[in-house]
Image 1 (cartoon, rainbow, N blue to C red):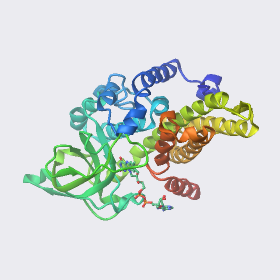
Image 2: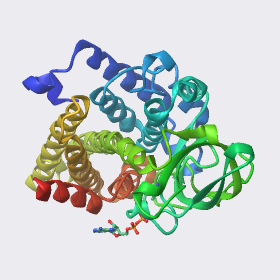
Image 3: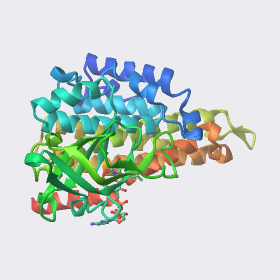
Image 4: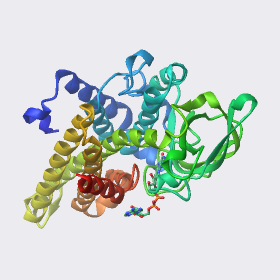
Length: 391
Ligand SMILES: Cc1cc2nc3c(=O)[nH]c(=O)nc-3n(C[C@H](O)[C@H](O)[C@H](O)COP(=O)(O)OP(=O)(O)OC[C@H]3O[C@@H](n4cnc5c(N)ncnc54)[C@H](O)[C@@H]3O)c2cc1C
């Protein structure tokens, strides 16, 4: 991969450690993920054991503090990891991103006892976690969520939950559910965050959704029917849940953009190789200027995405005041540009691109949802415009 880090623009001269992280991740992905990704997709198989193998590599708590077993790395390091994993399977990488988002929220907003109780087993990947914000009646307008949590038990020792979360990645497979619920007034200030174990009484899961891509992980409703959760599982204090959910999403958006970049790079590499081999009209198709221009545009879009994403990740690492805007811009730009790269790679393959065995149509299907989740690309524009107009 001719990454900008290798050609060395001053800002992104990767450190020795970052190069080592990228190489180690790429080696793992090539060995343990890439050979199986098409089968997992076809068979809708959730490879829990291979996901758990990434725990000892430090991928269970990439930007989580080291005293609770995290790797203590930064957001740019995380982007390098997700980009390399996604080159083998974007859906595999995206599951690990969601787990990291949930784990980071507990590490950052949990008290000492919550950090010690949950994070070490999440960082080692003994436990897997899901992030539960969306509801059937509220997606983009997340602050309108309705799942209600009411204090009960002696001295209010429990919350009793009623409602449902929609489209939850890993639902049924994960051990912990970091859920945004309503404990107070309407709007963002009435929302709180609870860590809910899979075996909480009154917790169940909806049917496994049949969907376009991301077949290796389940998407299901998480349903609460008088579901009892200990009050000691509340993160921070009541009313802080929307802020916690949004803080998790800044990093989540960069990770999902990295998943698009890795997947699109892989689609491009396949297209470039194929264009050199495939013969039409007595010559390789890469002799046609139409194909050459397409490849040139794809390469340009990949490199522009990489520069943009690494810049946004560095801003989040530095806690720059405009980091939220840059995370939204990077998510919007990279997921759109990289979907187009993958789709063009399919076109370069002609009819073979439409066949599962060539691996390109899976990448197109997997990358399509990145334009929708972690905030749709329209909502990214809302965030960017809001910040522009405030300035
Ligand atoms: C495979 C998959 C996995 C998912 N995983 C998770 C998960 O693990 N956890 C989780 O909490 N959620 C998850 N989601 C949910 C995802 O985040 C939502 O689907 C997304 O936020 C959009 O919400 P919605 O589907 O309700 O669409 P809506 O909010 O109903 O939007 C419909 C359309 O209207 C547009 N729109 C809405 N408001 C505006 C506006 N103000 N301005 C302009 N356009 C607007 C949207 O951009 C979109 O095009 C997942 C979704 C999918 C498909």
